[in-house]
Amino acid sequence: MSTVRRRKAESGYARGEETRARIIRAALALFGERGFDGVSTRDIAAEAGVPAPSLQYYFENKEGLYAACIADIQTAAMNVVGPVLETVDALLRAKASDDEIIDAYCAMLDGLADFMFGSPDAARRALFIVRRIMPIKASLVDPSKGPGSRVHDCCARIIAHISEGSVGEEERRLMAVSINGQLLTFHFAREHLKFVLGTNEITPERLQAIKRIVRRQTTLLLKSCKPKRA
Image (cartoon, rainbow, N blue to C red; front, side, top):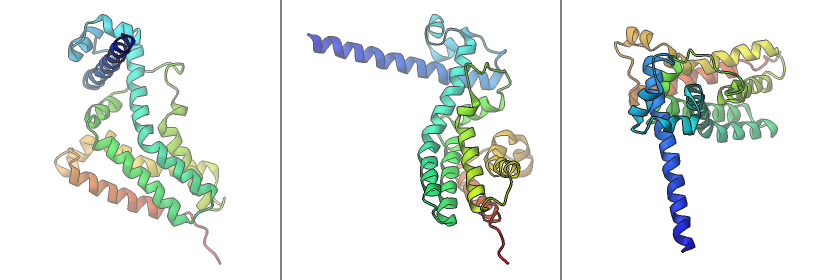
C-alpha cells in the first residue's frame, strides 16, 4: 500500500518537472520571437498547453519565468562546459604542456558550439539570447556565476600560463573576449552571415566548419602568447 503511494508521488513529481520544462520551452520560443513585453503569461500558457495559473504556481510572475529561462540556458550550458573546464583547471594546476591545455580548451569550445548550434533547443535559445533586452534584477540572475564568466576566466588563466605572466591582466581579458567571441559572432550576426553566405542556417556541415575554424584560430592566438626566447 505504501509502495503504491510512493509511486504516485514520484509520478506526480515527474509530471510537475515535465510541465515546468514545457513552460520554459514555450517561453523561450515566445520571448525570442516577440521580446519580453510582446508576450503575455496567457500566450505562454496556451503555447505550453497548460492552464494559465500554472505559470504563477511554478514561477510567480512573468519576470520569474524570464529569469528561469536564463537560468535554464545557463544550467544546460554548464552541463556541457563544466566538466571540460574542470579538466583544463587540472591541467593548469599540473603545469601540463601548452599543447595539452590548448587542446582541452578547444574541446570545450567544440562542445559549446554543439550546444549553441546543434542541440535540439539551439534555435529557440539563440533567438532568446539575441532578443534578451529586458534587464533582470541581479537577485534573480547573477551573470558572474554563469558559464560565460567561467569560460572567460578559464581562458584568461590559460593566457597567463602560456605567456608566463608577460601579458597584463587587462590584455588577457581582452584576448579572452576575442577568443570566446568567435562563437558568439554566429549568434548575434545572423543577418551578416546571411549577407555573406546567402543563408544564416547553421547546418551540421557548416557547424563542423565553424568548429575547425574556431579551433585553428584559438590555437594560433593562444600559442602567440608564448614569450619569444632570445
